[in-house]
Length: 388
Image (cartoon, rainbow, N blue to C red; front, side):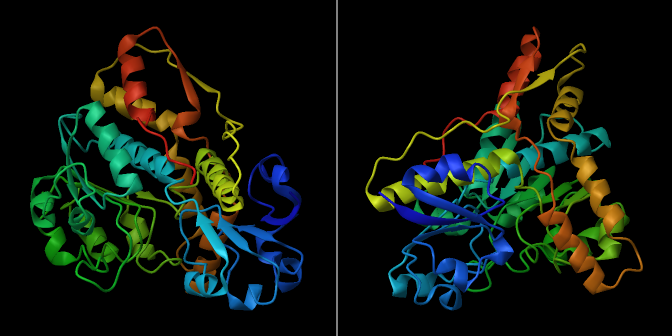
């Protein structure tokens, strides 16, 4: 087997992952153009490369893979018409986003929200790759979970009832958003949580938004937070992204530049998934996934058990210091900058983000069985994502 494989240079582990299938050429994603594609049989990209007719018409490329969960940069219809195979890493960043939400909840507890943890009710809107993982980890910790996903419920693939959104909003202590952004169909999510919906939430509620900008009216959410009608607001995606509203960012308790899914574990998982899909496309046996380079981080617990709420907050904030990323965004995007400047800085932060280890990269050192049980509940998923 000898294929020419053109890969975005910022994808980790490309030589060891793809060289068994042919010759690998690494090129920065923004430099992958028609001339580069003329060399390739296989193209592996991230979101910075637009994959469409203009890039690939007349090239030898027969298979495209995007080592990302999002695929808005790919013209799927044209690829089908051209007979070019395609695979993505859907679900690869689900663990990272789940980590983000748990760390955000840890900060909320630190700030005085979510009294009575873990005996609280968490609403999850969108029960896909992330929603399922988050629900299972939260339930292992001891939380009550209400999931809302009417489109998925119609397919009969949910492992629990889909609770009506109105009921979720009225019963929750915290709300975590994980739905895709849709504008049509029976269940559009654009503008799903506007003023009327948010008014149903209890005044002490927490919101964590990591889905897509436009699902939540973040201006209204910020106003409610400013008036004390929300206890905590964490935003990783923004209604007018890549320009986070300065007034929204000023009142948000956590503000980050759409990096919830950017752990090194997620990136590595994405590469392994698309490599497996390439093997299937070629009709060969996929190679066993390699372990991530940072899979043996050590976290030492050197304190006594402080109780479930403080322990959860302490542990999740040490597994991922989300407040560092909050400070990064606030320092980069300051009041007085133009929308263009803010958009450029937002994109730059995402492009230059130094990926953090995922929760699953850590091993805990402690003899205390209570810390051990919490660590296992917080960090481990009880199933594996299939490669292809």
